Length: 208
Image (cartoon, rainbow, N blue to C red; front, side, top):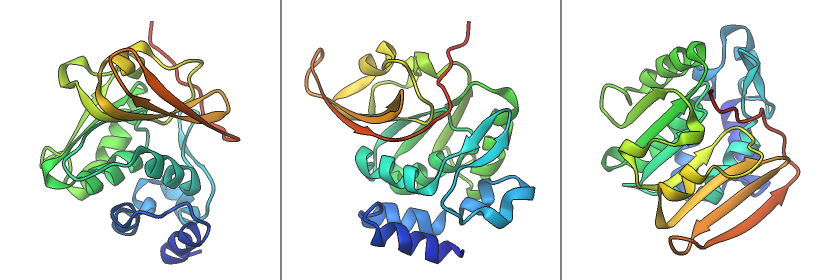
């Protein structure tokens, strides 16, 4: 399958809808984030191994989550579990040169792998993306508050730190167990919660 056919399929199936997100999918090439031996599968709609027991997510799932997140130009976004760097780079393309993406990854080997991939697009040197190797469940308080928070690994429950570090009106899209959840912050203590079941993710792990 080619990149264009993958993207066109996601549009036809209704997973990709928003022009800025579609343009990001076209510009940020998934093949740049896949280990060499899997590059021939980069445009297949499947998750692929990136080492250390982790995966680059299925394109359908990433499209679904980004559409739920509704990233916009100028947003400040926290990306938890950046892994290959693909979602961070997609987000960086969407938020543009007035936005920022703060990406956290706990596995040192993937921290470096993802950083190298993100910099293929110059996002680190331009300052549009900052990466932290650490515990994503704690968020990134120094950079808070965030307009949006995206997580790429499945938690048992939503970390309190994410709720506290989100602006009122902000959105969190995160896997919990076997569902993707959307949380919209209505006030300091109130969240609207919407569940979308039927997904599979690697577990979200907090560091000791």
